[in-house]
Length: 378
Image (cartoon, rainbow, N blue to C red; front, top):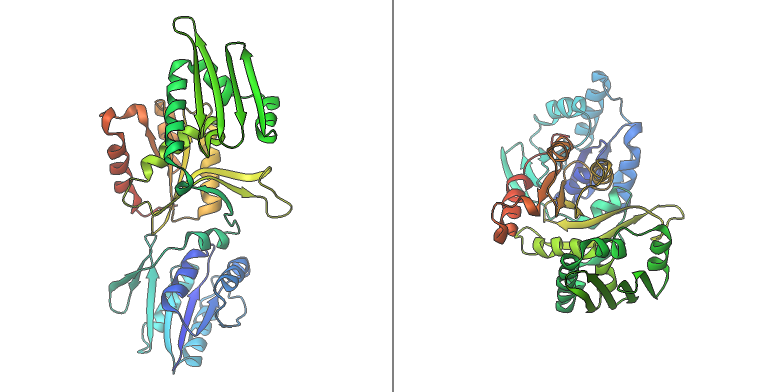
C-alpha cells in the first residue's frame, strides 16, 4: 500500500506545496484546470515527487467532476489516500469530498492560512507545517536572491543609525536633501560612484566611501556647523534613502517573538533580463514569522497615497493571499491614509501615534499579535 496524495489546484501554489510537504507521499495526483497548469508545474519543479499525469478538469460540470473523483478512488482503492481540498474550486472540493469522505482508506485535509493542517476525518488539527519562505517566493515565480540579512548589521551599524537620527534632528531639511530627497543626478552618483560628495553649500554636504564611511556636515544659524561621522560595515546603505529608518524598524521587529528571519532591502528583479539595478519591485523589510510572511513598508512619512497602492500590489504579487502587510511611518498618518491601509488589508502604525513613546515596540507588537493569525478574506 502506497501513500497517494490527491490535491486540488487553484491559483495559489503554497497550499498545494504545503500539503505535499506535510504528507510526504509516494505519489501526487494534481486536479487542475487549464488556468492553473502553471501552478502545477511550479509545484512539480519544487517537490520532485512522482505524479500521476491527469488531463485538466472541467471547472463546474458535476458529472465530469464526480467521474474524475470516482475514477481516482477506484484506481487507488488499495492505497492510503489524502485529499487536500485547500486549493482549487469550490465545485471540486464539494464533489470530491462527497466521494472520498465515504472511503475508509481516505483522509480529507485542509491547511489554513496559519499553516495548521486540519484532518476532516478525525475532526481535529494534527500539526503546524514548517513554513518555507524561500519556497513560497519561488512558487510565486519571484525567487528572493537579493537582500541584506538583518544579522549582517553590527553594533557599529547600530551606532551609525543612531548618529543619523541625531543628524536628522540637528537639521532635518538639509539632512533630507542630502540623503533622501535626491535629484536624479545625485541618485546616479550615489548608486554608481564608490566615493563622492554631494553639497548644498560649504557648510552642508555629505561625503562617502563605499561601503563603510560617511561624513555628514550640517549647519544651523543657532548652533553653527556640526560634523557627523559614520564608520561601520553598512554606513553608506544606512545613510541614503532612509536606510537608517528601515534598520530602526527591523531592529524593533528583531525583538518580536514571532520574527524568525528578517531581511532588508529585498529586491525582486525582472525574470527575463532583469537586474538589481532595474528591479521589478523592492520591499523594505520581509519577516518570516514561522507560519507566514510579514511584508513591511517603511517611510518617514507618506507623501502620496499611491505609495499604499504600490505596496498592496507588491504584497499580493510576491506573497499570495495568506500573508500580512505592515505600513509603518515615523510621522503621523492622516485619517485618510489609515482608512486606505485598512481597506487594502494593510496594518498601519506610526511611531508618533504611540500613546506611550517610551514603549513603542510593545505597542507595535501588541498590534501585530492581534492581527497576525487572523484569516485574510481577500
